[in-house]
Length: 237
Image: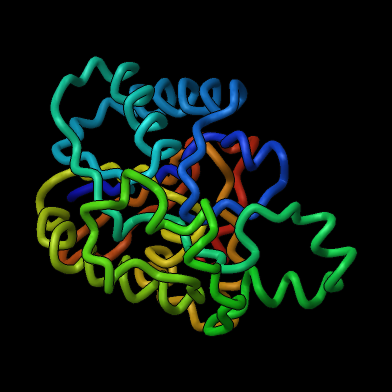
């Protein structure tokens, strides 16, 4: 038996401001830090030895993981991978979600946020929010830095990394991943075998660890949020 713990980062500063964040590298809010601390305590209570830790390349996921590791008294290194980054929201990046909804309509904004293969308009390369203008992404090959992404695009890069770097470890080891709403949604689509319509209904709460227990051949035997008061439906479990 092995275990995978998926944690969406604690509330970020832009979550608090209700803005489309994507690849912009914002930090945790004070509430987000508290969510990460609580996540660490909940994980510690499981008495699991975590063998491998992963995070996206983004500050809010990195700092969530660092706070969790402090709770676990774990001083090992973790792997930060851009492939686990949040979805790039293109020209929506930085916009307030409420104001954008008033302008474009609720249905259109929901379509942009949750449709499987619809990309928002690309973000201008001159924008300070474009990943090419953000220092932490300077080592990523330029051809691999997106101007916009659909959930399908996010799924493909996340799943490729998962299959190449993480999947084999889960055959016998415990893994914790600190990432984002859409990168975790992508993993859940694969692990729970959700179709393109069902994945749009999956909500991922901030700072609430999702524990997935595997039996033989990575068959899921149990799946639950550790904070049941803030749990969201897993659709299939």
